[in-house]
Length: 184
Image (spheres, rainbow, N blue to C red):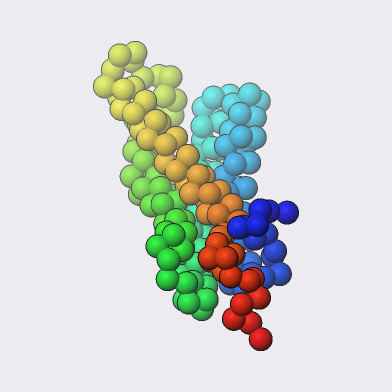
């Protein structure tokens, strides 16, 4: 599986690379499952106020775990890159890519989620209680849009890093050297 320039041979990956791929896949899968399955189901089967409260707790947990997993994945990527002696800019970008998700989760946890919670509390627990056309409702709309963008950034960076790690370019193949070159 894979073209002549791309490898897909998990046996050739280091333990660090395999651990990073597993963590990135877990992180991306959790975000995708939450966004695609749990969020729509919560709003379909729960009253809006309860769904928002439950989902708020879920997003807070995803933010905490995303910060931790993303940070570990960056460390694993940098360590693996150093062990393999990889010097390419693309390899460095691939190692640092999960940091975009860490940034998104941190921004969500520190700024967006607390602001959304404060607006819900000010509205008596339900955003629907805010007056139409009011500044609080506009602020909620903006924060909700920022929250969705941050979630998409975290999900995209975790998924892209996972896929990129799986199908990383083998520099020996691109240069035309034998895949066995330099091995004894």
